[in-house]
Amino acid sequence: MSEDGEKDQERAPKRSSRPVTAAARRERRASARPAGTGTDAEASKRPAPKGKAGKSSEKAAKPAGKNRPTPKQSRTDTKKRSLFSRFVRFLREVWGELRKVIWPTRKQMVTYTIVVLVFVAFMIALVYVLDFFFLKGVDVVFGN
Figure (tube, rainbow, N blue to C red):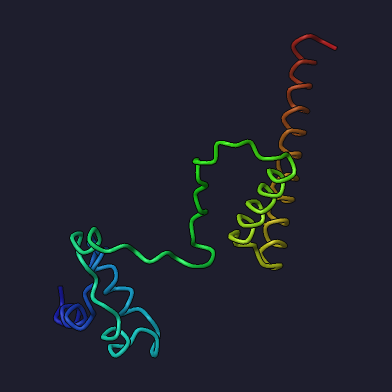
């Protein structure tokens, strides 16, 4: 190898393999953030991540918004509710689940629709071609 090639390798930054630990992944993500998001000043304001011992002694804060799990219903109710109240409860739960859905944008919907239509057209053409050749093969075998 020539000296120029060796110098180029020395100047090129070494690429590290993918981070294995969660701490290394967080550090890599923080270094990849654009300027102004995730500065050292902001990092010092956040509490330091705790180990497994810290998680068991404290209750985690409930996430808000779409990432929040659906609340569990109490099974202590032994009385039978009316049909109307059960239907209203069902609608409330459906509405709660629909609020957590991440809906596609118009551009994504158009893209997905076009992809599906192209795929369906391709499959129709494939089935038509295979059917045509099988029909010709049957005609040759059975002489029609």
